[in-house]
Length: 167
Image (cartoon, rainbow, N blue to C red; front, top):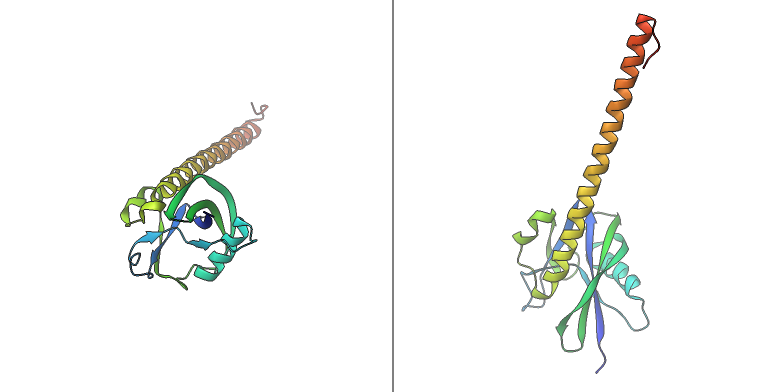
């Protein structure tokens, strides 16, 4: 049996993950998922993701890294997930969704995810939280360097006022 790939995007923006609530089909309506759709014959999966996010949400996104694993959706369909950066546009629920939510890594349990999306969501939240920690550390390093430069400048200014070398 041939297996068709469905792609989804763990879309990140400003430290948050985008969740989309399904409006159709009826058996999925009201549940949350990572947005995406089927790869067309001959289409590269990353290109399909870009196309699906444009069609479903009206945005341009850049696929970044594939989340390891694949998850069966139903016979003949498997889910592959990429992290993606929002490149332009403001997401809107245009197709197959009736609501969108931006979730911080510690808020991902606040929505009722489709079961097959849960493992990828957990990994995406872990990756996002790690990125935020790294970003916080970089920001702390930048702040510490700024404070050290300001302290050095203050010492040099004080030394200049006192007529001594600034060390």
